[in-house]
Amino acid sequence: MTGALRAFTIGLTAFLTVVDLFATQAILPALTAAYGVTPAAMGFAVNASTMGMAAGGFAVALFGRRLDQRRGILLSLAILAIPTALLATMPSLPVFTALRIVQGVCMSTAFALMLAYLGEHTSARDTASAFAAYITGNVASNLFGRLLAASAVDHLGLAPSFYVFALLNLAGAVLVWFTIQRTPVMDRVDMSHSPPLASWLRHLADPALRAAFATGFVILFAFIGTFTYVNFVLVRPPFSVSMMTLGAIYFVFLPAIFTTPLAGRVVARVGTRPALWAAFGLAAASLPLLLSAHLALLLAGLVLIAVGTFFAQAVATGFVSRAAATDRGSASGIYLASYFLGGLAGSAVLGQVFDRLGWMACVIGIGVALALGALLATRLVIAANHRPDAATVFQKSVPDSQS
Image (tube, rainbow, N blue to C red; front, side):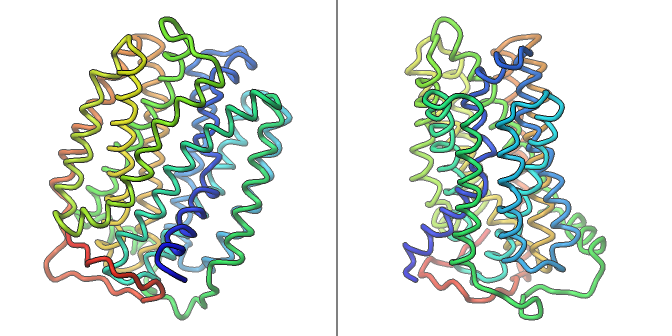
């Protein structure tokens, strides 16, 4: 498999794994109207998937070493189609929320196991680029998943759109079946005989990893706060965009599809901390634009915060894999749990801020999260005597990534 084809396969797997996660944000105003609830209530229900994502991350962190990674990814994506299809029945809001949580568990399990697979079967020099390809697929899911959701609702209706995504879940399982190698548990690297809790404590005792976990938290906090509640800004005056136009607005993610794959090379050239500072700085530059009454300026702000946060996510994810001396599956699980807890917190906290104080206060909260992320980046340093082992299933010619 060529390097380009390998990167495409990794990215497509990520796309089909998390396409359900944020697609519903594009139809959030329609769901709010259909259920007759406040934006904050519906925003929390839709983003309850992040609660499941966090739970799935914790589960992989605890039990991931005992799972066959390929089988775990396959089952997670196949099972994911069930709650996705059940959402089409338009259940009560509590049941809707519960199904979103189950979706999150399935997506997170597949996502974390794939991160562990890449970390364990990618050479040290290739890790950053492999993770960048995977995060790029995540970026693509944010764009094309939202476009697909808006289009499906516009042409098929709200309920049938969920069946479309159930089919995509099954397509992800099929892709994994044909592309992910079977790997016996005994052949995996970083296997240790210590209890799962000991691995957790070892990771949490590492200041650099603690800072990386917290960085993931603030990244999704800022991202969710922006792209959940900006929908309500866009459908209200002075913008008053239609549902189909709202979906098209998410072409703001398109530049990030091209910039995120560069994360591995940037880290190799300048290091983790400067790369993160640049990413958070770019995202922070969006804040005054998000308050503009001109659509073009607001869209430019959305482009900047999308590019910045996705780039930061690629850098931080790759750092965790390199910084974890042992049991990368556990470290990836903790990182994802922290990342998605940040999304849940962003949805809940900034939802209340938006409802009570308005969009300007919400943007201020986003800025505080970005500033905290830049501060945390100062702690992301791998010890000089640390170099995790890695297998060489994926061989590419990207320079070794240093922190």
